[in-house]
Image (cartoon, rainbow, N blue to C red; front, side, top):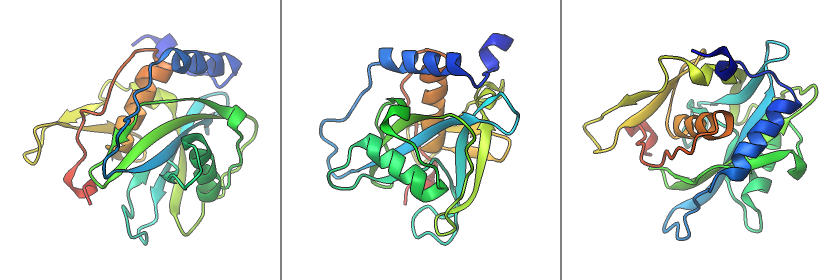
Length: 214
């Protein structure tokens, strides 16, 4: 695999590249969400544990949560009345991980992704420059990780798996901390394809595992 594709130095050049890819991408928003509730997640690009390497933030939800406890997730939640998806993503990033970012740090957005549990997720890509200290909220987050963007380009990723409960396959991403399922896997796969690789790729046809339907 070409090293220029899989290595992502955390610098202004990468920021410009990601923003350019997102600016050119024609985002699909569902005009009629039906019974789905609007939500937003932050794909936060940050310097990884390896200095100089770009990473994204991934959380493990505390098992005490009523919905999706213990699952792997991106910082995010329901859109409050009067909020834009960008403001929701930034608010959730602060509430869950103690990270303050501004609208100027938002590089762009990706497609709406409908979930079996009743949400319409809008992914928002945020650039976190400088030294960032993570302060996970114990009421929501069991742990937070910086996952190198290069991990999204592994030769064994993604895993596309049929399930008997649906006519659509599920998508999974093997990562160092765990194998992550949709919806998080679908959102991260589109981030990889669109924001990092510059390829127009859709993911709303991918299914979620049955445990995520509730």
